[in-house]
Structure formats: C-alpha cells, structure tokens
Image (cartoon, rainbow, N blue to C red; front, top):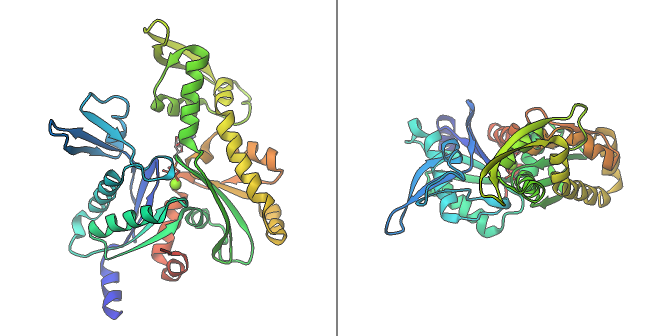
Length: 344
Ligand SMILES: Nc1ncnc2c1ncn2[C@@H]1O[C@H](COP(=O)(O)OP(=O)(O)OP(=O)(O)O)[C@@H](O)[C@H]1O
Ligand SMILES: [Mg+2]
C-alpha cells in the first residue's frame, strides 16, 4: 500500500473520456492534454491486413474522402463498441501518446464509458488499457462524470438531474448522495441529428451530402426553436437526379424540421425519467433545474426547447464538451470520490 502510494505520487495517472465522437485525455496535475475525435484511419494491404494511418483529428478529416483501400472508422458508434480491435488500438494510441515521456511508470487510469456498455464491452476497454501499460484501471459511468464535471452537488442529499447529449448516446442521470438514483440511456444524440439532416436534404432537395456535411450544417445553423433572425448556408453535394454537383441554400427552418424527430426522442426520454422520479427528489429538480452537458447541449436553444416541454428550468453547463472529462479528472484528484464511483 505504501509502495503503491509512492508510485501513485510519481506516476502520471490519467483519465480518459472515451466518447463515441470525441476522446479526451486528462493527465493528473496537467489538465486536458488530448481532445480529439474518436476516429481511426486504416489502410488495407493486398493481404487484407490493416495498418493504422492516423488517429483523431487527422483521421476524422479523412471520413468520407478516402480512396478505396483507406477506411476511416469510428470504432464506437451509437454508444456501443462496433469494432473491438480498433477500439483497443485507439485506446492504446491515446494512452501511449499521453504517456510518451513517462513510460517507465505505469499509470493508474480512470476511463469514463457510455452507461449502456455491456460487461463484455467493459472488459474489452479495461483490457485494452491494461495492455497499453496501465497499472490499475477504473471505469466510471458517464452521467456521474457529467454531473461532477458540471459542478452539481452530487454528494448532497439532494437530487441533481443531468442530461449528457453526446455523439452516440444521450444519458440522463439523477444523482443524489454520491450515487446514480435513476438513469436512462438512449441511442439518439448528435450522430442521429447529422443523419436526419442528410436524409432531409436528400428527400427535399434531391441532394446527396455526407455525414460530415450534415454535422457542419447542424453546428452552423441548427436550432431547436425558431431563431429570431433566420440563418442560412450554402450546401454543396451531388444532385440525385442529374448526378451533377450542385448547391442549395438551406435555412435554419429546414434544419429544425430535419432534426425534429431526434430532438423529440431526447425530450421524451427526459419526460420518462421525470415521471418515475421519487417525489422528494422531484422537488429538488423543480428548485434547481436540469443541467445539459455534452456537445449536443450546444445546439442553439436546446435548453429553451426542453424547458418549454418539461416546464422546468434547464441550463447548459459551462464548457459542455469538457464536462465529462473534467468530472473524470476530479475523480483522479480525489481518491475518495474514485472509490465511491468506480465499479466493475
Ligand atoms: N456547437 C455545436 N452545436 C451542436 N452540436 C455540436 C456542437 N459542437 C459539437 N456538437 C456535437 O456534439 C457531439 C459530440 O459531443 P461529445 O463530444 O460530448 O460526444 P461523445 O462524448 O464523444 O459521445 P458519447 O457521450 O455519446 O459517447 C457531436 O455529435 C457533435 O456534432
Ligand atoms: Mg460523452
């Protein structure tokens, strides 16, 4: 134990927010040192063997633009591990990159994983980190990390409600006395919105666009409620009928219409959680409101949209894209918190 503490003192323990869209790595005492898309670009040789060309930002830039033998993979789509091998390689890459200089000491690693992961998937994540050189691996759940990162009073005998809207999953958690009292995870989040926009543009304008363009449109002009000033942007793609390259002007109205379904699914999941909330905790939520984290919290007026539906105050956390990483990092600093949160 003493030795462990000494090692703990010297080694650079780290925490990882292993998201389906973005992976963030935080080094104890240093803060967030890696913040990159969870994408791996691989090349297949003539024997079918895969070679990793790039990971992270560089790999994401290749999505939808790769020649035949290069593939950009998002190994953790929809909140599940779609490609075990690539997920493992990605975890290993990020750990090694974070730890380049201090590789002689094996770190303790806390990994925040989507709430819905199965035991098999958890085991795979844990083993990847161990094989990348971790001395000890702790897994913590995303709604809890999000609540800590959003500075909610998680240890109080009071209910706090957090909604984390990521790329693959939306996770809703009610936290009280340091534990998750209620939680719900749905596989509707940012990615589904991107796809809904791609579909809409195809149906309404006969224009074929890729997922990355769908995401750009969402970020640039997407809004959950009508905007005061209409927003618009020029979108380029391929005309489905003529096959020629073409451009259209898309408005925020279009995008809102396109995202209607996924936005509603998130609101419905939130309503479901509110319905099963024990009355005493419900009182706390009425008083303190609901906090949004994750990249999806940045959709224009999503807070207002949800608030109109559930008739409760809704707030966006400060730096919502960093909330989970910050929460996981707090668990690194406070061993007591970690012991309380970590589970198998
Ligand atoms: N300004 C913005 N407006 C709207 N959406 C945004 C904005 N910035 C990022 N996003 C979206 O947020 C999502 C990524 O969020 P985040 O990094 O929290 O997900 P993740 O943690 O990787 O995923 P998960 O938690 O589901 O595993 C993407 O769908 C991205 O398009
Ligand atoms: Mg996340």
